[in-house]
Amino acid sequence: MISRKAQFRTVATVLDRKKDTLLRATRAVVALYQSRGFNIPDLHINMEFGCIRNKVLPTKLNVTAAHDHAGEIERSIRTIKERTRTTIHGLPFKRLHKLMIQELVYHATKGLNQFPSKNGISDTLSPLTIMTGRANPDYNYLKLEFGSYARVLKTTIPATPQPPKTQEQLC
Image (tube, rainbow, N blue to C red):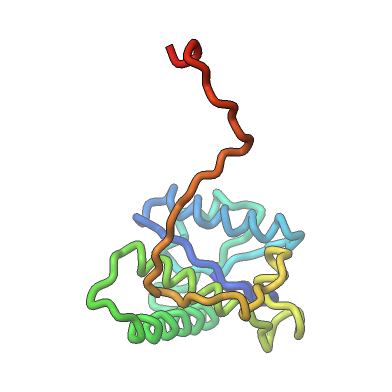
């Protein structure tokens, strides 16, 4: 999804095309916008989402014709695909796991949301900042790119030092 005013893109992993799955994904996005104070009067969707028309009221669903497309969404999808393909081209892997591809799509979408849009609400605030309230990260401290090899060690540090156990406590 992409909002017309904020130019904020969202993607969701949809495992099937059932009514409940589509409704859950749509409600999650609508709830995100409403949590930030946005009113969503209507959604422009394709025929696939027509089955949830009465479940998202008072938001009105404008369903496109069978072979028609919403231009902004199609362009956004194409841009995300281009970003994903260019990242895959630079990776040292011959095959990618399904989970890695999903995370790569999220990564590309987040990257597009981190910069102010020409047609957006603000010239200085990114869509990500508007929708989450968090500032953009400082890229001087980000050292790893997507798909980099990394060895991560997990160490546990006790919260408070424990006194040594006596012989009676061990038994």
